[in-house]
Image 1 (cartoon, rainbow, N blue to C red):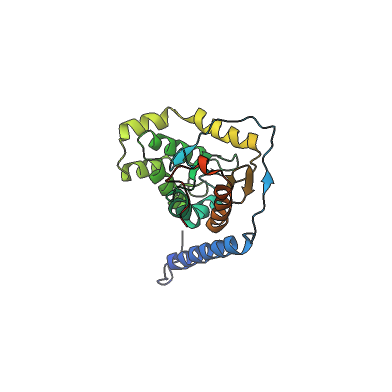
Image 2 (spheres, rainbow, N blue to C red; image 1 turned 90 degrees about the vertical axis):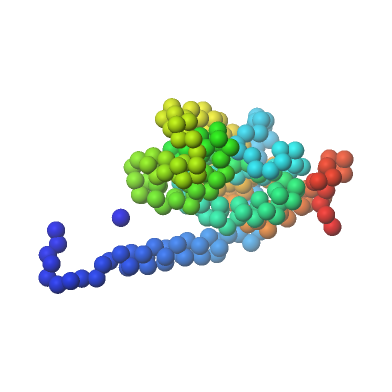
Length: 241
C-alpha cells in the first residue's frame, strides 16, 4: 500500500478501494453480529489493591458512577467502540450526569505502534486536548498502525499540528517519552483488576471484555443509580423521570 507496457491498463486503485470498503463493512457486520445480546460479565478480583482513579476523565469527577474503558489505540475493536459506542456514552450517560467516563491506557504487546499513539495522546492531554487527539488517533488508525508503517511518528505529529497544539511542547513531551510511566501505571491498574483484552469496559465492580453497547451500559448505570440512597446523589445527578 517493472512491468511491461503492452497496452494501457486501468489503475488497480479503484479495485483496492472497493476491497477496503468491503472489509470495513464486513468488520462492522461482524462487530454487530457477534456482540452478545446480554452483557457477559466477570467479577473484579475482590483482593485486587484499590487503585486511585487515573486514566483520562470525561465528565464530572463526582458523578455517582464511573465507567472505565481499558483500550489500545491500535486495537481495531477499540476503534469500532470509539465510533459506535463512546459518543452515546458521552451524550446519553455522562452529559446527563449519571456517570463519568475514564479512558485507561492498555497498549498490547502485539501492537508495536500502540505505545507511540498512547504517548501522543498523553502529550496532548498536557495541553487539555486528550479527547480530540483520542478521536483523531482512532479515526486515522489505518494510517499509522503497524500494517501501515514502522514509524508512526510522522502521522501522530501531523495530528498534533492539525489540532493546533503547541508543537514545541508536544515534541519535547513525545521525544522524552515523558508519560511512559503514566501509561504503564494505567495498564498495570487494568492488569490488577483482571483485564486481559481490549476493549474491556468496567462499570462498578464488573468487567465486560469486548465492551458493551451504549444501551447495555446505560441500563447498568440506571440500575446502579436507582439503587443508591438519595443522599449520595447531588441535584444534578438525580435521574429525571
